[in-house]
Length: 110
Image (cartoon, rainbow, N blue to C red; front, side):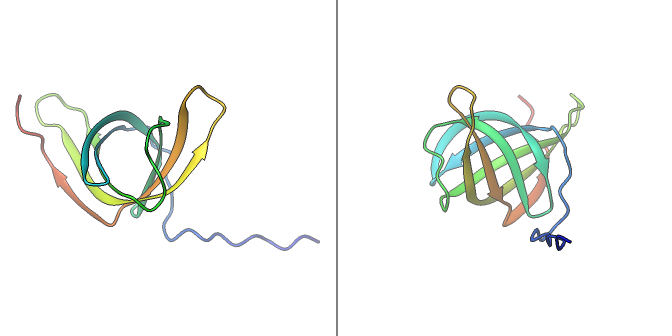
């Protein structure tokens, strides 16, 4: 009989495909547009171009929770890149990022 593998995650993950924008990486402005693969209260997993994303570096990103044009709601997150997974697709990696701090915001009207 094979023993059950214990789950090491601190929070339940939800398979949510929400718009995501990375705006800072290593304290430098960037513009990476993607979407979440899954999301929890302590982290997010998303796909991104294989650029400079490396584990351990600080990251800042926004997740769009409500897409109503009149009043969109975003989750402004700050954390660290926890892991980067190579994928078979051209130049795309899977990125796991912690969420150390967050706040709900409404973007300024354009």
